[in-house]
Amino acid sequence: MRGDVTDNGAADEVFIAVDEGAEIGCRALLFVRSDEGTSAASLDVEDTDLGLGLPALAGLRQIDGDGGSDVIVNMAAGAATLFAGVFTFADGGLEQVRIEGSQPPAENLFAHGGGVAQLSAADCTADAAVLISTAVAAGRRYRVDRHTYEFHDGVLTRIPALDETERRRLERIPRSFPEFAGPPFSNCPDA
Image (cartoon, rainbow, N blue to C red):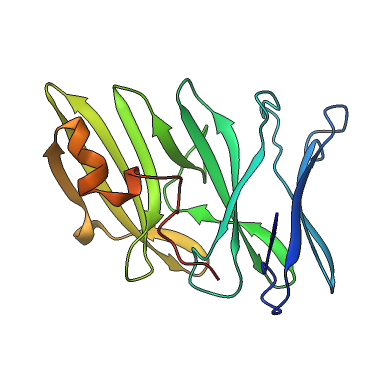
């Protein structure tokens, strides 16, 4: 994948390398190669399952509102949900976006997709905030919870005053809430 991650005006090469025989922390690495050098970030912790073709690049979008494109990587999977990490380029290296209040096993990951019982989505708002949403089956309708986050010192921090909860029929969710209509962060701008 190619895009300007380092914000130097030129397309960088973005790729993942996996070596299942390597030590924990080195089995899966995200690389960004630019004219100025190569940066790497580990995608691997002790319980990382390297099956199912994960980790896998999912896209490049401007999520943090600063610098070049941010790298979206699908890092884990549940039965019907994928979990993506977002990586920014700052201070000459790659850093995973941290989410305030995030806890294992999906720490600092954005759930997207899902099945009949629950849907998850992550996207940008028109004013450059991040929206994390879930839709949970509740009888004939779904309870849709939308939480807005902003970046503060490199950490996504929730703004409870902007939380929303609504009820919708399943077929109306993608029309009413655009974050459910496509891949994660698909409404975020290109850098």
